[in-house]
Length: 472
Image (cartoon, rainbow, N blue to C red):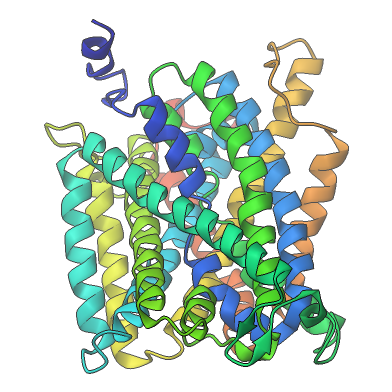
């Protein structure tokens, strides 16, 4: 009976098709993507062991964002997630802006993931152009997302199982190699690798700070659990456990993995040309292990792209219902899948295929630089929304959930200051980051014009109170 009730659509047209085990693995697996599996190699080569501190700092910010999101979810679970919370606690314009910035985030993230897929497959099929691999992967994932949310949840469950299992195996294997001072391709594994070859900050503190922008991208998708809440049975029971699981696993998987990578091999052995995990296992002299790890990181890239199509489909439908996105993106098929939004995002992913054809070597870095802006905007929206929720509770306007943001409001302000620092650092980083930084005024102008255009088309009765008052 409960299962039958869960499959009945709610007021928004969604079914509660995601099970407890699927949501928990989506929450964990969503935080493990190509930013770690591929991006960590190039960043280690740039900043050295200092990358550990960058992952730790961004991990602390991710912790507070997740706890803030958890409080918002317990206040009101919805598939619109932070877009709806921004609309409720900040204002209609904030919902519009955060929704489209989230879409920008996943549009660029999808391009990065598609690029990563092509890079991984290149190991086995060096003569196959990157854009061909990217196109095939995109076609398969779009098809899966259009079938049903249950199929998405099951596929994402197994994708996450593979990623988490691989990281657990790496953590145990890596720890054993470090403790045993193993010889890896002529290099002795050990703590000394953190301090040899220039020390912890071989490229300087400045370069270490510049890696923060790329590292924050690695943590993107932790907020996916908030969107999944709208299609989850008993979200108030499941979500706190899922979020708590994400928080401590982030510390173990991300910071622990980068720490081990830095101890297993000298930092200058790694490169952005392949996954650092593949580098380590291939250096052990067992080629098959390197190939297996390459298959795992390929799975991670496919998983993240899969999640991007899922989440943007729901966010775009939420915007379309308010007249803030093309009407097509609000359409839902008979399987209760918002196919319009999914197809809309897939068109942006096609741009990634083109980018892989035009500039295959630069595609990944450019994509993650722009995607990082979306991550910062999304996280800031969540933090500010929780801050406003707390203020409303203090005024007696609503009851604050028992699952709360720790240290609020001071942790809110600290997290916002950290996110602002990341944006400022973009102006002084490499070319991809500077491209992203100078795209900020362009994005702001486009969003402002879009919002004004939407407002001008709305009748006064449907406009926010402040707009009607302003006209009066």
